[in-house]
Length: 358
Ligand code: IPM
Ligand code: MN
Image (cartoon, rainbow, N blue to C red):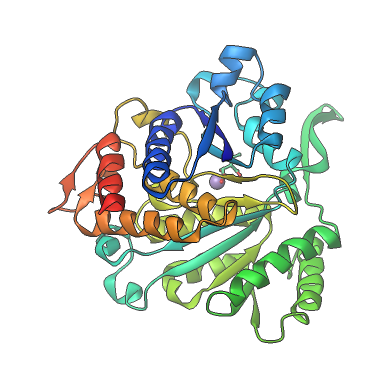
């Protein structure tokens, strides 16, 4: 029996989460594993219900669970709120409190969807199979001091890009271990020609690399990486990078594979529950219309099955079902091609389940 904390959140969060929940129920029946699902509010939903983006009770339940599945948070309704009480605090607080410092964001091009990529066929020929390993609890997101103040009659603002060597070391080790199970290449992306923090990243990562002599380590400036992701995405295996760069580059990688709706993520710590969430946001423009793509959410659940529960075979089965559904031409509007069978979010969930059952 696995305790899964389910935080659907806002916008399309609840719609895509409902599909992931359906998949877990189907898997539970077929493979005889039990999930104890505990559904709780987060983000705007929690602000409306409890006055804060994440209550202490919800945080405690997440801490006690075996894994957390997170949908998406935020929306125009809460945009006017000050930073400290915005819906986004929910996910930032979970990451920090559960010490989820390593965020894995795989971008894999499904050949049948390559026409959805904005890139030319010739650039995609080699395939795209990138794993962005984003540091998740440091850098500009959490560095102090931070804030806006008035100095000499004008407003000034600052954020602090701070990393300790241990913060770098622990995520680097995860990056290298993952590279070892893949194509054995890790590229550290930074801005070492300008930033002191990046210079420390280079020092520490090159030290950690000595523990992994079988792997190839390279370095790339983030501006160049943004370009190379478009010019030659097939050249990347594992990209290791700090929090903000990882946020930006993972959205870019999602666009390369055709849709933000396809990219899952896993956030890992040293111990305690891991958290799984799609890379996309709450997409308020299409929320409640049954149009959202549930694939990223379902693939996030698949990552949970593998990483948190060791159910690798079942996880593979779910991933395979997703690939087969997409290859068979089933598509939500975001990934639709001229000859696709366009279906709703719910139907996509059903189709994927039917491929799991096959
Ligand atoms: C992401 C999101 C979050 C981030 C937001 C919602 C705080 O963009 O997971 O990529 O910036 O990390
Ligand atoms: Mn982001």
